[in-house]
Image (cartoon, rainbow, N blue to C red; front, top):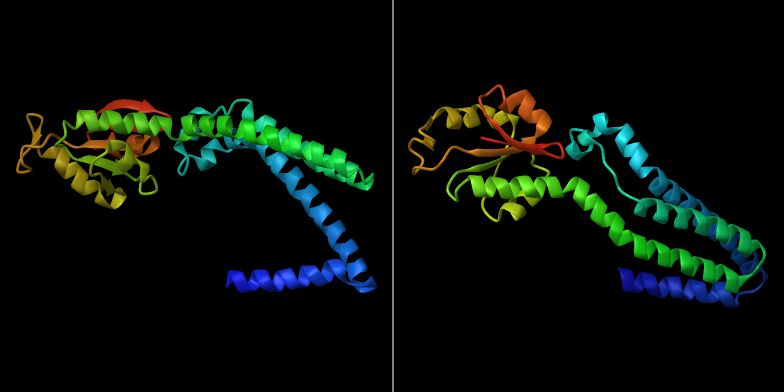
Length: 235
């Protein structure tokens, strides 16, 4: 599909560039539309980065089910502000210098803003990882150690977090609220720190959201080992 589409688009652009008066008018309209879209997208993206931390923290309660790491607040550092400022400035730069028809100044400004975005993006990604994934990684690695290599590790109500299996480096049971009774049975079957009839395996280690531990696992008799970033490790 894409090679034929590229050929058709190329032929249209060729006629567009070399055409007569009609193409000239069409070029003018497309140029205005392109500048409008560039300015609008740049301004919107810049505003999104500038306001990201404030919006996330303001809506932490609403997003707590899908983003539990927001429950303790999130700090993304200065990088999103650098990216947002660069994008917003580039949109104004395009609008101002395009009207003055200063191509060299326009390209220089866009190159500088692009460089700022490229330099700041790794720092923004690192801060996002620290807020969203680092606590879950630490708890998962603690769970792998606490399991002794033989106990079940259960990711409770974390079906959308496949990284748990990656961090643990072993099999993970993804169970939800519908399997809570089975998890409770496993807990009640514990005898002297072991589960009867499961090959001598130790009692299950459960990773969950802190809210799910408070709502389900705590009342079921599980003991909180550690919590971090909106997640809980229990046994």
